[in-house]
Image (cartoon, rainbow, N blue to C red; front, side, top):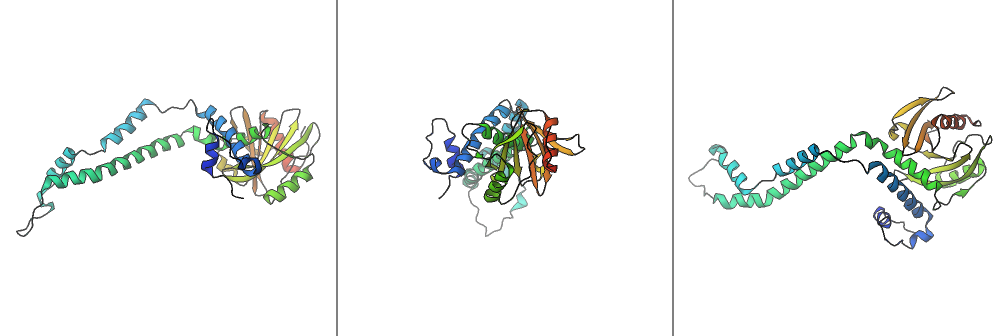
Length: 284
């Protein structure tokens, strides 16, 4: 069975768009749509207030306008060129200058203008990517997975014990994840597969008296998530810490994977959960 393309998934997010019948039968595509919906909502919330300042807009527009050549400008530039640039000979047959000028302007100026526009767009994108807001991209995606786990649209694979989740991960993703020891007010709600940076990842959800958290296991290096800061736990371990909207994120590498604990609760307790996950102890 073929799956929906990225363009088709994007179309399902358009207001008023009908949902393809394929989603009724394909869990993988349905999960991608659910995750995209959650992520889009979070990104709108995070980036809705970002605007380029007037100075940047004017400099970009000026760069675009300044590189569009008119026939008169081309003629002036060519007239200013040294006469020795193209030596004349007795047998050389001179071509009319003005038709050549206009032909050059018609064929070259639009290309130069298009190139200038692309350069200006690249400058604008570079400005946005070099800003602190770009670092929230991974955080937004992780938070989107967690929010999708909590939504009524997500169908979690029911699992009350780590062995069931381990078997699910092994079958779907080819590896067995680490778990904190359950008990002391913490139990498993279920597990699922999701998508992070267009790659399948595993996630399981834990209920506790401190709140509901998702443990998301990705293959990327923790540094690539650019979470922004590090913090030490009570056990003396150092974790990468970030946030998106109301979600806190604590991440660390173990066994060739990066474990991300995501939830709307306090970071100190999430680091305690991570300590217990890495040592298979019970969180207090």
